[in-house]
Length: 196
Figure 1: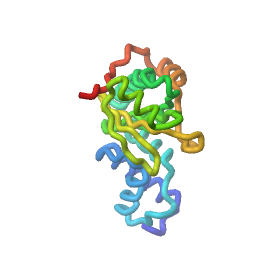
Figure 2 (figure 1 turned 120 degrees about the horizontal axis):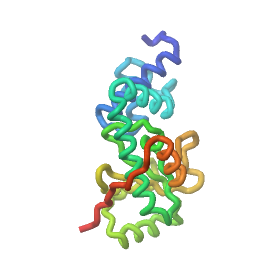
Figure 3 (figure 1 turned 180 degrees about the vertical axis):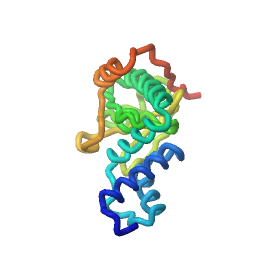
Figure 4 (figure 1 turned 30 degrees about the vertical axis):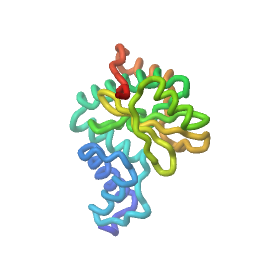
């Protein structure tokens, strides 16, 4: 199989990585790509599909196997994202990741990028609003796992240079417009978990 055309191998890796993400809840695209390449007996280091190719494979897979469930899940997660973005409006949040691209699975987190002069400002905001969270290191960037229902939020603090080029990023008004063109917007159902 190593002699197959590189674009064919990229597509095979993207399909299998999408399956791993959907079925096993892998959130790390790089890990899903490496696992998929290894499973297919292909090199792990080069010729791998982009994250956007994996998103496209995931959307295609879900459109074949569970289109109604996919549409309902995407709508619910985007409604929750809108509610959470309103809470974090002082930090100009952008929705990124699977919920922004539409390539969601039952394991998807809501991913937000915010601008903040320092993590201390954001820490203080969370404490003042009694929002429960855990700090994580995601590739050298400060990230917060914020406990929420029905799904958790992964929030990253970014400098201007740290945004991923090519990734879908939606501000609140863009997300609202997108949802209005797809389905009527109902009252968002979301709650951030207060600290105890």
